[in-house]
Image (cartoon, rainbow over all chains, first blue to last red; front, side):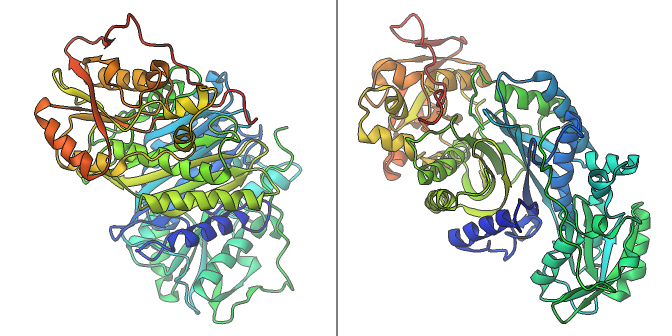
Length: 309
Length: 309
């Protein structure tokens, strides 16, 4: 639930405003505006993400890639809450007559994603539509110790998993490498590590990087009432700065943890086969500083603005 | 999760096939193919329904009606499981630039629906789309004693709530009455009664009537391995037969109950201010018989085939 539209967060802003009007945050005190909503004291969480043909994918993705990625972007949100995904419902709007071959390939990719993250499809609704294919997946799971965006404290370290800018390279580079194309098509968010970090009580705040470090870390800082200083030399992936921080679709985790937790975090990450990098420090003042740069690169992400090729 | 598309259930057929391929029915043994999925032994249930502009509504519905109806069709499924709705997530795909006035009116109707059925919006995802407006709502709730479609037994009575054919009249009659137009725009499924019937252990099987009694009772019979004999004279609402059984969008309950439960059912329904009618009997042989008619009227429902007027 962290996808942006064309403007700065009109989507979430609208949904958040709507939710506020409807009756405010849920009793558990969290939910709307975080990666996933926490439903109850048992830590049941739920999240929804939509993919629209021509907006969230074009023919660089096969139908199977679309199915797989739909699962990935949703379980990424669950992992970012410190949760493990359990079930999913699918809402599919497709043109009629249905293209069964396309849908079968999509289903295969969806299955592969669901299997990878131990999630079962429990139901759904398929409707015909005169427009582009639209798929919404709702994923539920459990986060015994949910981690919100709002818990970062001054002095905490800023951590990110994996490498930044792979999808960006796939979009922006003249000759993107195979690793970049693979991540664009089938991102592999470190969901199990997110859950393990939460269970171990090692992190104060966490979200997944869907809209680029600049925007997403900004959200985490605003939610926590802190700022951050980020060292660009420490950003993992070795890609140009604009790709690493100003694009998106990383589906990596960004989290805040006290310095004393560093060794435990590295051990846990190694156990899960995920690389982690400390890229900065949270500060009491609310600025988001990129060390050595007067400003952050402008956002370079607008999904698939050209539509299907 | 009981909406049909143009053909006989291509939607659910596809989702059910997909779910089967993914790994079969959930552990709790129920879910896919019923009105809502049962997630666990505590009776947590979840359902998803989508409304596509020009397919599921045209300008007979105001934007606020669309928001209200989106809630109604979903909570109807929860009530048909014997559950009470608790939370919802919204996936909205809308053209950009966003029509804020339209969306505000939609949100108002959505709010009214959520309030009416005690459901809180916990999150969502809004995306831009070059196509028609598409809204998917996922609603979760709890059914301490979930009622499936598969429990009807020969000798049970066939019950329906309310009146049949109101939305049909709104579609098919040359001069539909205000009650019919109101139901088309803002159906009021008897969700609380569904939950109460289940809690009281009075019903063996239940579903909501979204696609007309002929099709929906057929589903309940197939799931239960029984047939039914329906007396057309007993169908509530006083509308022509084709409207009463062959159209849809009734959002009333249809349930199976032993004859001994009749008095208790009538008392409970009266308490909830809902009328109930016994319209037939379940039989051991699998036929669906409409007494005095050689066949059931052909389905007359294709959503809004003409698109927005």
